[in-house]
Image (cartoon, rainbow, N blue to C red; front, side, top):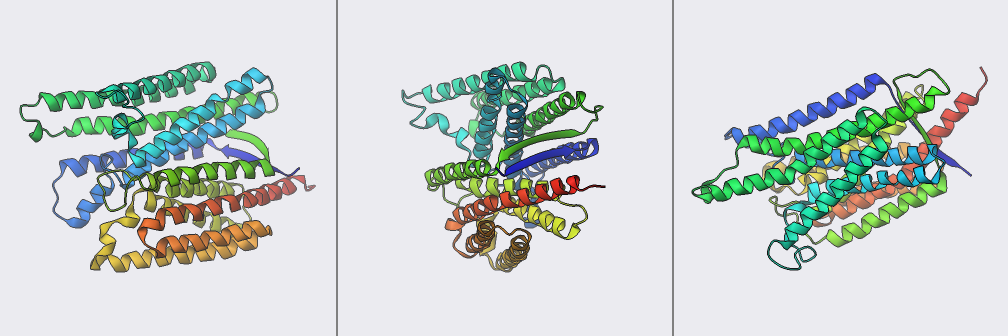
Length: 439
């Protein structure tokens, strides 16, 4: 049976670069949040730039970044599960590894909420507030405590032997759990003000709240990476002298991988259908849940494209750079939809209409060029069909009214995600053949 062999290998320098980039991005959005609230600028362009970097507002690049950081933790948790499942043989250890899947689901939910902003009103919904009063919010906080209790327990049970992993996990959990306390403190300060209508949240409290969220995500990301380093050390101890590289191997039957991915996408389709009418794209004060679906799917394509670029034959620079271009296009589209830029009022003005058309044409042109190359790289006819469908749906998302854009963009990258499984198999097969050749 054909298998997808996944080999994730990162050098210490690459790990430090990734961590440095994340920390720099964290500081950038925090600086943007501070500037958006502390500086009073009149320039429309500068105000728009600061608005896009404001973590305290919805539908911004900063909010998209925070959501994708949470989604990255979910992806890393899934990698930890796969690595644990294939290295353990006792049923107890394997089923305990299922905690990583719950971790992943928690962070997918948090990522979705960061763009959809359900947490701000969930306590008032019928599902939570069945008994009236503040019962909805009390139930919501109980759910938070239960989830926090599970994450704390699992961190100690699974991560305690992996050194710093448990420290970063507990630090991230404490930062996350501090958020409701900070919000309650701000509500108390608002109510205690002589004139609540004139009360303005101090910028220091704003930065503390937003900073604790993104650095909590960073702590969990470091915790998962540290755990994978611990696995690498254990696996290498009996074979080779330990090196500080992060090196993880696991494999899937190709059909199983495809069916699992298809199932996940069908669940996302159901989720998109459920929230499609939750908010319209005309407003910017509230989060828009449906924007998360194309954004998250395009971001996963970005990650997979980088992975293929990493494993592709380094002598074949031409094809490798196409995957790098695909990664750039994917992360740009992810940001475009996750920050609701596709429905920004600026594009409807005389000044914004021409730049909007130029950006869309440039993106479609890049997609067409990538499509032609991706079709040549693999001979799988279904992969070629899905790649062509990606271009068709992406072009429709850019051409039709923005009310339909999120769904069409999600469909486009869902097709591309399915198509890329053939590309992963193609390049890992090439790598295996290269190793098998005699010297």
